[in-house]
Length: 207
Image 1 (cartoon, rainbow, N blue to C red):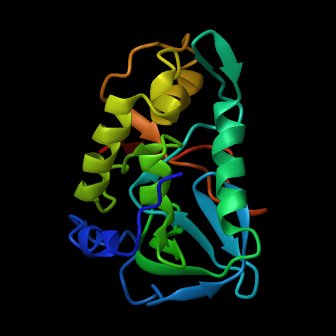
Image 2 (cartoon, helix red, strand yellow; image 1 turned 180 degrees about the horizontal axis):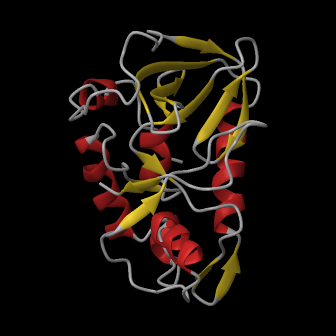
């Protein structure tokens, strides 16, 4: 597997940062320690209980499946398992940059010198993506273009909807579209994590 090292940090710090959703005063400068994986893009720090979502990154929903060369595989489960394997027993170091519309911290997160989001995108585990109002990470789109050109992971399955289109189609009760077109219209953010999570997604546009 290819590893995107700490050098990508210099690129991610050039992110086109939108103002933090809930202001910057309550955003910690660093969060460090062992984590519990919540889903393919979100972790919870065991000591502090803080929930962090990887900035500039999205991954298939847990129930999504894909087909590559006639072989079916559980894309959502693979994405979540990838995050578990990368972080299990490791100290995760996150540099928060904002909060999303649900108040969840957005951050660039590393295990050692490995940028988790950048590496996942490079290996075709997920997508470079930001919801409207969230900071963009231009370097991730460059990484994604290479993975897409090589047909890695999610890019090997022409019938796999990107998660923002999948979520929109489920919310609208429509049949899933097979086009990998750019998102438009109102797109729901991932639901807040925790017992107080709302069952109604926020109406937030895609980037």
